[in-house]
Image 1 (cartoon, one colour):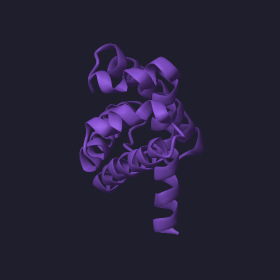
Image 2: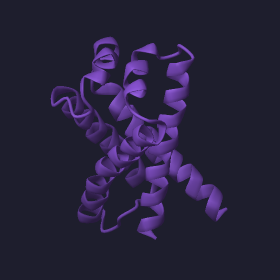
Image 3: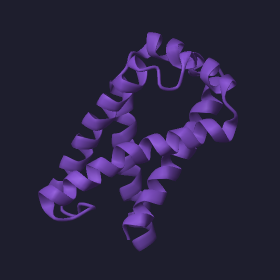
Length: 139
């Protein structure tokens, strides 16, 4: 069961990155254009999927320790999971920026938007979308 969630998280990151790539090509987020031109389509999307997974896995482990469940199923645990995901994503985004993990091609993005908030929002968004997808699958 946990593998299903992890696969979905990967693909949420993967397809979200493809959407960001398209938006950058259409001048909606021009600060990402340099990054997407420096990577091929699949490579950039795969990095995004792996980044989401690397943020979610510690969150799932922490949830197991605190609540004795990998994936929260009570509303208050889900809210804590989303907020914790935002915090982890915020920290990850700052680390990605300060350690220049994806190279100089993201510098224009971080100079425009800063680091932290949108990384946190991306992980929180991934969690919400994952719950929505799983709701639809199990409906």
